[in-house]
Length: 119
Image (tube, helix red, strand yellow):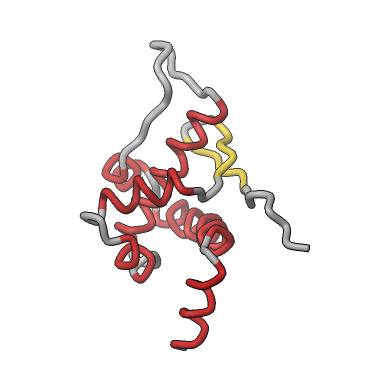
């Protein structure tokens, strides 16, 4: 039987712990950042810019799911550009280690098979 639970991982950012996951909302946000080309985003996921885009989408999705709000009462939101300014190289590397398995777990089986056959 297939495990249909979404894979999650904790990620600390700006003093809060976010429960990250990769779901269709995250893919949709990333797709928008790549002018509709999600496959391009997936092919370039190891590049810093793409990592920041995926991480921002996951952080924003987690903030919404966890109802994380700032002092102004608004949902916390972050952009890839903000992350690029605030995260160190070490933090970015850690983020990559956290999000890659989440992205892989969210991929449809057919896409996973395609990637395996090409390698």
